[in-house]
Length: 321
Ligand code: BTN
Image 1 (cartoon, rainbow, N blue to C red):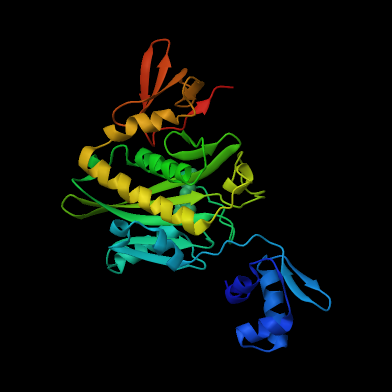
Image 2: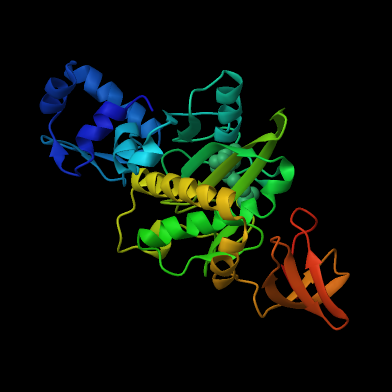
């Protein structure tokens, strides 16, 4: 974002004279006016008050690498390679590039906007500037692909824990790993695997998108929600949310690597939005009642002829019409 310094000055919501802004920025008043126009082109709502100056009307929640680092647990901060970008194609793609370039430590990329945000099943992920959180982490596992069973559900539990810790009560999980509020989808997790780098060493890219301030998204074709929209009384900071998620993912991955998926089965089931609902799976060939997950993270549907385990990635589940 080119107008970051200006927006930081205006972010208190007070009226600032052109002269005081020019002094603070070390530029002329004409240059201030040009910056104001550019910020408005970037989507900020700024009012010009005749004879007094400029006032920012938009909610501003700027990403700040130092603020994120300050909120991380010391054991998480150590060994993290955190990049906070103004714009990127996809934070997942950026983490792949970080790894290819031999990044030192656990790569984490956060961006203010994505120009080619990716969702599951080849869908696009709406990624407007300044509104939401777009975060990806590179996670390394030992023991081959078999140790990853249930990982995407583990990440869902980690994100839910992080958001609840910040006051977002009642986060739901939609199998396998969508983050839900009663109004609709709040966020999603895209898990992408890289080949075995060495014998048994597997690299996972975990991409997490959370709707934070988004108030309008015509291109999203399903009911959605945002933290700001559902909990309007609370002030949501993307830096704090990012730090809480990084802390929670690192903690959860440590527990998962040591004890396996069993530690996450109950916390996942407590948030299961399909439990007790009438479901269809496998293109309507499986019909029954949602009844949680098995020890491998597969979703269980109780049908008239017995319980069927639906595998992650095999098919999407839907509530029966
Ligand atoms: C889904 O379809 O539910 C998964 C959405 C994942 C979106 C996030 S935003 C950060 C990361 N970068 C991407 O391109 N996608 C993921």
